[in-house]
Image 1 (tube, one colour):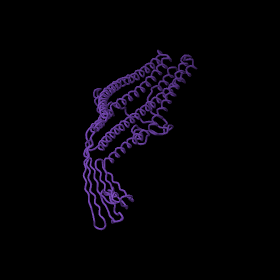
Image 2 (cartoon, rainbow, N blue to C red):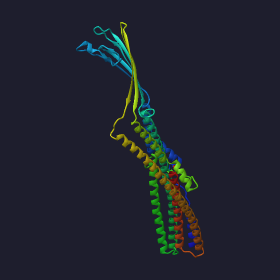
Image 3 (cartoon, helix red, strand yellow):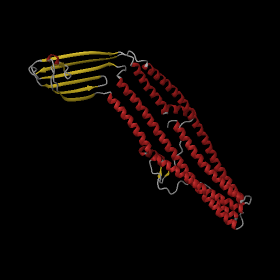
Image 4 (tube, rainbow, N blue to C red):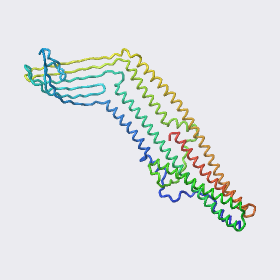
Length: 465
């Protein structure tokens, strides 16, 4: 009787993962990543921040181009005192004429180094002995050298472009980090699902064993210790199920947060292939990581930006030069006319700045040295982190292999106890203990599988994947 009872119970004990149960929605890893990158809050923040940088770069490009402005107005002036001293040069036309009043119009084309203005007084009413007149003037100013090849505005555009590249690298890094967090959350939830399924089956099996022990105990074929052990095992399995259900619930909420879903959304994750190690050695992993990590590229871009600053600063110690020229023409409506042409050269000479420029240049030179040190230090840190992660993957893979072997061992051990029980050389306690050992081994393998998956994901992230 005792042998028959436990033979029935033993058929319940092998633990196989059956997958999540009673979940309304099942999502895959690729669906989670696509959803988070398309509509998740983190992805929106990344995209909006990048768009701000793009707009700022477009603004700097526009500032380095030409702008066209126009003006309309009306001028009126009245002279007092000696009429001979009332003759002034008209600011609208550049032509010396008597004080007049009338409408004025102008259009100006301005660029970073060049400006051009066309000014007109189409009608100046007659005053006293002066007939009605009109005036037209063209003024041009060209900066030849302001300390930077192409002009300082060009430097602003170049720095803005480098800044945009840094932001794009940061956005790329942020998206990769988001994808990693999604994968991490996904595999954590997948492991929690597997663990809950295992724990539930263990509970079912322990409850079945408890019922069987109660039956044989009633027939006085099991001791009070056997019954108490079965009760403890069943209660412990019940607590394990509660703990596993809690872990799954928290894992689901964390993944839902990344996907932009409500906290109470019910869903499960589909089975997924284990992440793979993309390289065959730690040295190859380090080499790929150093070539892919965006932080190193960002430092190089920052160095280029500071090189532009240094050039601008050094340019301030050089003279600046600009030329200007203009032509103006005025005529009255009785046939008289006059024209004036002008040409000017202006050279700016830096004389004394109390050492301000020299200190700024020295600060830029030191900053460039800091970037070089940061780059070397970061490379060493990245190399160490990747090597550690690669070796940890090997360790976790080894633990997973040991866990699989343990499952096989305790499965064989359980079958051996079953055989011994049939021949009367094993006790009820032996069977109960073997069932617990088998369940624990399966739980450990589930945990080892999750740890190995997360270790590979960590390595991939450090390598820039």
